[in-house]
Length: 153
Image (cartoon, rainbow, N blue to C red):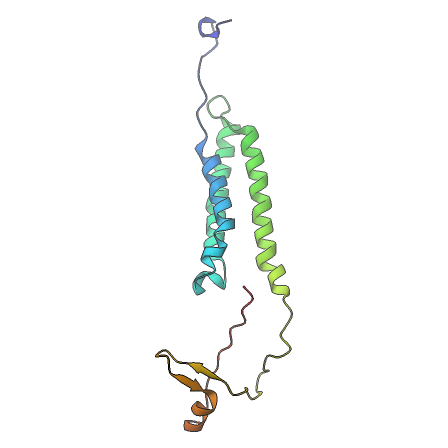
């Protein structure tokens, strides 16, 4: 039966709801881009770039869901949008659990020096490639500032 000539029926093809697809891709990209962003100190200590990607992706998913449920005769995506949103919420929750809880449970190092404790003597290369020892630095001055970065990534 041809519905094009039936009175009251509009033969209208629904539009592609691009915010749903782009939002989901951005959320997945935010999850898997942590390995890239962890190479840089500004994004390694606090994953603000990943959280920004999650926020943009979630906003696009919400926009797509509002379009799909608000105007279903124009936009498609009620089923796929709901599934994508549920998966995105799970991925964001998984990332947040791993970064903000699980990785913070790394036990304290028993061999690390405590505050006020004398550091063991060591030799490292300086910025020009020459070996420099802690004892050499202490022999010329009264104090040396050591900064320890606890790395677990």
